[in-house]
Length: 166
Image (cartoon, rainbow, N blue to C red):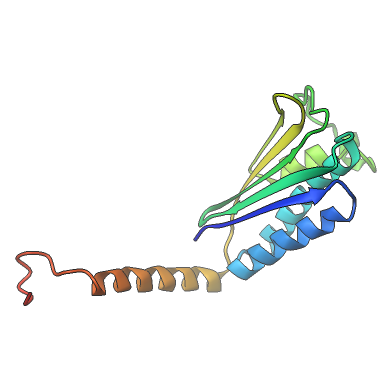
């Protein structure tokens, strides 16, 4: 399975819940666990909120979501000022503060978080998360894969020497 969602959104607060609901609906429909969906929602919301609050004069930003069999990648791209140096890890006090927790949350809730300044201006956040599937979705995906394999074999000619008439 591969699902890709690409969104170009206005740099406004109201765009954040749109992104959050879109990724949650796609992951829930595909059969990702509720806990994993919640982690993804928070991480992506933080990335989009940072664009809304800090990207500068950019009118819009882009979100690219790729859902695969094993992992999810999310890229948030803007044309703002970029990130500068993010090498310092936040302290426990930073995590308790009302603001300034976004990068720490993205790192904590993702398996990989990369923050970069885009050449020519702008910032990019790349988040990767290994997906956890519900038992029902694993059964469904395995049955679907077996059905596809069987369908491919039904239309294929019998291999030479198989003894099948042909």
